View 1: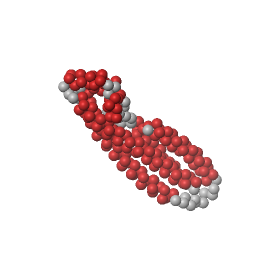
View 2: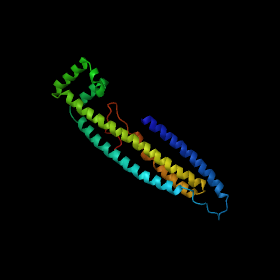
View 3: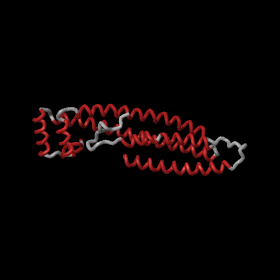
View 4: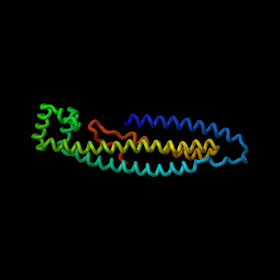
Length: 213
């Protein structure tokens, strides 16, 4: 999923560069026209801009909701990691990847179960309980990860909507308006990059070092 998001960002960037070249070209042609002439408003640009603004506000709420969920799950994950026995249990999980997949519990070998039982005796804690707590966090992180990808894709869609308006304004010779809207498109690159930077770790959890806004 992160790879597809990064690929989409690359396409968006290439599209933006192409659009700017077109703006410059059209702007140059427009400058040769009479200074007294006024280009008519581009058909449909106002409605497209209003729709883009509305979509941006909805996207902001979606991104804010994702970060709120991220903060909550990171807090719960930190709480699990703060338990004195977690370090040893995490080592077992990393050594035996089948333990991290609820669908592969039947594949747990007697040797692994013996290691878990040893761990339970050492910490006087049922390993099944800790594994259950871990799975609950993994499931929650998986849901939040889907929200992250959805928010990122929607942000890309909003940028594309604004670029459509930029094109219309540029074609109509409205260089100032086109540049202003294009600046807004650029301003959305940062939150997009921040969403791209967030990753699940090898255990399917968000690290405490994840960018939590």
